[in-house]
Image (cartoon, rainbow, N blue to C red; front, side, top):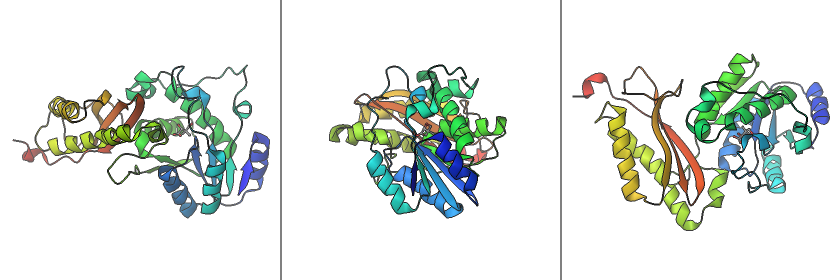
Length: 287
Ligand code: PAF
């Protein structure tokens, strides 16, 4: 595996690389969620490029940019063992310059849900991915459904900016108790870790309510109460049932829309997110 640090060296490698290229963009601190994307890319492409870049533009002023785990040597060994062709790990000055002027944003999608609490977050994601997609010029790029809104943002960006890249979504990888694997789980104490399962448990509870109520506000009310009673230390930021394409909230459930339940919550001050697709019974099942 080649470790590449500069745009120029990556361009040179890309100019010579033959066959299909799969790309897994990451911010490092690799876990099983990332590795499942890498394995999938390796199985579908001749070469796989992984990037590790903790992108300052997608963190708000009070967020965890400086604290975000950085472990390049460990990550590098993991990727080498899997058979990745290139690890692109640029320093910040390769990606941004103080006199940069271009800023990108999405009008609607980046202002919903996570975007309304993390102002500018998805704009930063879109900017860095545009740069990375130009440099790597992959045929396929891989994203985990744990960050479901990010997946939709990336799909929209690729469609509207005519990137000839196929976006491959991969299901969320979970711990045995259901907690979605995330680099931020490492911030939790054992007590916080035990509480963190609240997100997945609440989503599962929502699924059990789906056959009982068609109106989503009823389901969400019950789910909030469930969460509050069982996991009082967990502070919900948002809990929603949305259309999985537009990410707009759904007022009632029907088989014609594809509903997804989304949650963002704080555990010990650590912001965690999760989501699941909801299975809706046929109309006549509701009385
Ligand atoms: O999901 C992430 O790790 C980041 O948002 C990404 C896609 C690597 C962009 O910085």
